Length: 233
Image (cartoon, rainbow, N blue to C red; front, side):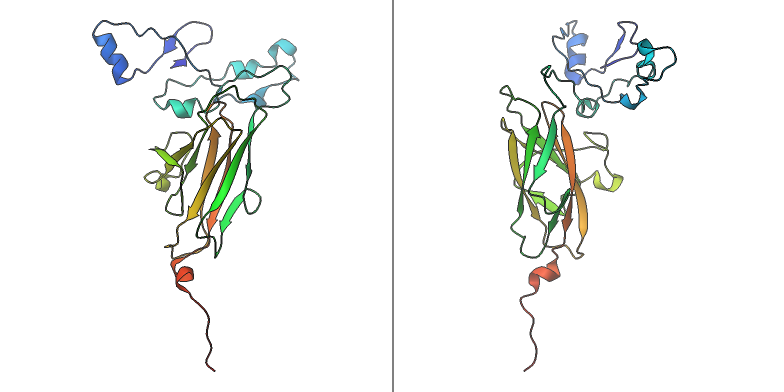
């Protein structure tokens, strides 16, 4: 659901099939909880130089058009609001280790068995939530994983996807309380062209903290079938 007007209690909601079934039988939805998100808020509009003073610093933000109700809750709630300690110095963030270079994982000859990536949540004290992380491989034909597949995605779910990748893109999950979660990425060795790339997006489910990196696959079928070089004696 989405609030259409911040000055009133009007709410725009899209019901699921189950919700419509309950209402059709005269039942009540009895909504008892909800999640708040600031996805769609542009904080760069905070204006400390506003001529009318500090009470109007956030005027442009408050006047932003609100998102209408979306059936893709996982996308519209990507940036979920969380409660942090008053002593917090920064919002939660994900740090990746195991990449071969800055923000990139490159597979070369000898890496056909796969490489491990570790995602570490920084700046958040987990109170027992074990939902863990999910990560999205934009093109699973370039690289696969040993993690549990959770769903295929549409073009508006979780992240904007390239049109040509939508039929194949896949989401995977790794559960646990953290703060470290690891997963292996395994390159496809049947490619005919070296250097093919895809993006991987990593998101912590409880806080919405996310990051991304690029995978480069330099392994090809021809590389794999080359046994040795030889010369005539």
